[in-house]
Image 1 (spheres, rainbow, N blue to C red):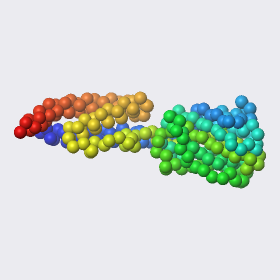
Image 2 (cartoon, helix red, strand yellow):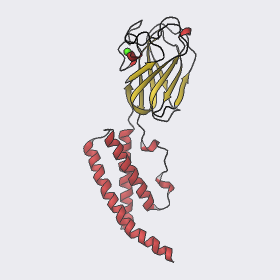
Image 3 (cartoon, rainbow, N blue to C red):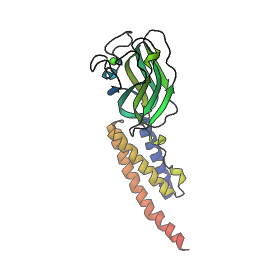
Image 4 (cartoon, rainbow, N blue to C red):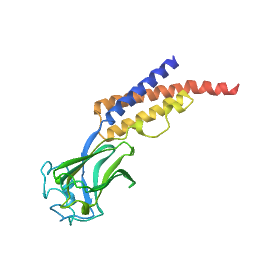
Length: 249
Ligand SMILES: [Ca+2]
């Protein structure tokens, strides 16, 4: 009887974790909420802040003040940094280049602690003089990041090199992606159950905080969690006692 209860409990925990993780694993696009640069043409027109938000220059092409431009057209070693509301595991970066594109030489992702990870490096080259979306797929950086850093060598591409917006698409860190000890590495099924219940509790808490799942669904899941925890306590009382009895022999 108790074994059956335990199996049902484990199954329910798995289903719960699956549901919450699926909700969290949906990828979504973000536009920058803040942008800075080592050089900008003015603090208003053509400023770094012109890269904040969705594109408002693209698909137009040319020297247009709603995109960022450095103070001089031939600067080398120019950097721009864009910050996003939520740290995600990035799948794709989209850079909207709207005037003399292809001066970018390196792109880094930066996590909340400030560690940077190079995702692309290349030579500046003279690309066709038209607006383009420079797309970079990321498969190597698995850490959640909330910043993108761009490096430009404007001396290699004649004319003003302007960027309208930078988007990132990615997923929130799901429990499955977290490098923690898995339940199966424990010998005792009661410990396994406990670890799973703790994971489920954490997943529900995160989904509640981030508002990433239906509140009624989360409430249901939370109630089920409480019931499972009470079954777990009961199992501890009965199985736990018999384990110690066996220890006496
Ligand atoms: Ca813009």
